[in-house]
Length: 209
Image (cartoon, rainbow, N blue to C red):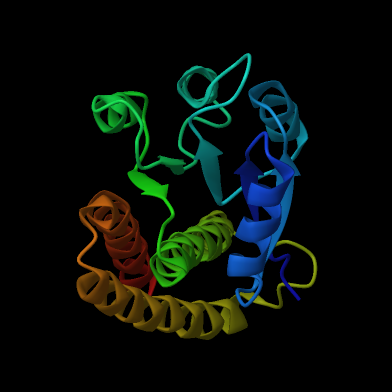
């Protein structure tokens, strides 16, 4: 059974972390808490995350500075970040958030349904990218003639890969529909990137079939 996607929740207030966990409790993911920017950066050293929910206003290292550190690291620069802040924040906070690399920006109090929907789609994209990476590796092994232990013989690999690709293509169609309903422009780039990777993988598979 594959590991569940992990989401990093960064906020200096305990009650906010509890609220976020409650909102996301119905989703199939693992929330990890961080009470500061420094604590978030430490968590990112050893754990792979699908998404970061990052509070802007924190003592010491605020959300913008934390995001800047995350985006400078090769290992973490592609993790999506959604900034969270109170509604009376400075008017340039949204611009600064996007400039710092955020894919989205929500003001508190936010609609729990909206947050769940956004997190759900980004988590699905993360899971599909993981599956695509595994299938691309299997395809490379098939081309090179070296299959990993337990993968079966070469004759059995292509039908299994075809089945997996079809599953991911169907999932992508479903996530596209979710993104269309949410009318969230932040999803356009990751969806296009995933579709491009899937197209290339399908072309490589078809060349072998």
